[in-house]
Image (cartoon, one colour):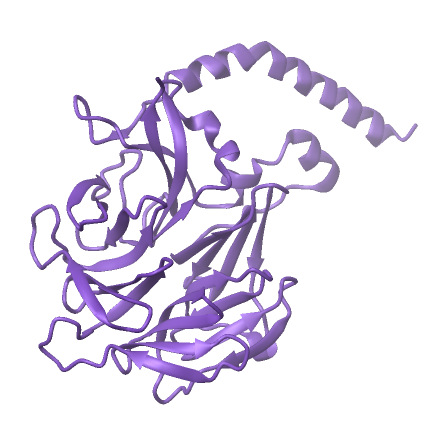
Length: 358
């Protein structure tokens, strides 16, 4: 038998023995880990901070001594400056303006890969992305001023958008239409999903009116509503699918329920609205009537769950099993909440919406 292989087996046996002997201590240390919940007691807990990740080490695990010995030491892949985030199936897609590409994490396969296409598909400032039912990837690139499209294997398909009149910041696909927030015309542009022809833009409103958009940064759609975060007016504005203005949430101010720099938004299955505020460095939750329920996060102070210039929030109901181990045993995990941080040591925070077990 090859001498190097024999040594590898000896090291593997030693490693397994040491792991087994200290596993009880590892379990104890995990149990002693601080549980961070929002709001704090005695109020009813709704959000628990679960974990965070900032590099491939946090998702695929650190390289084992055996792997280092046989294959050599691998270099961790960092998440540099994440902005957008979306979840499709078991995959998490992170738009990273720091690398001019994406990180794609597959929770099922336990992989972490950079997506850095070249040629016609080369990205410059990927702000947000969306994955459709065919697993095609759509990326809103603020510097290319286009929507760039790739197939499920990462092959470039096409790009679209009039670069003279277009600066996309976010994208959402619904009802065979592509909805894009456009900073150039202060509107939401709606394209045909197949032909990419512009169908219509909204709102048809004058400056100073309630429905006018001053700086539309992010967009989210439900079955009957279009939510737009208008950073220029310190509000989230709500429209129907025909572009008719309905109402708004928030206002300019320093109190809970108000905003300084509202950015990423998401809506859960109970019609609760999540709004990331890069100024307050937190995320606020509003009920379907637009009343503020609570906030979580807060300016970074080296505490688990703190935020540092957060940009986007995403809600996920499909991958609970991968994060269940972090949940306090007294709670039931309802769904996951991901928030990106452009700075700080924790680039993506993972929270859980929880309820007490009966």
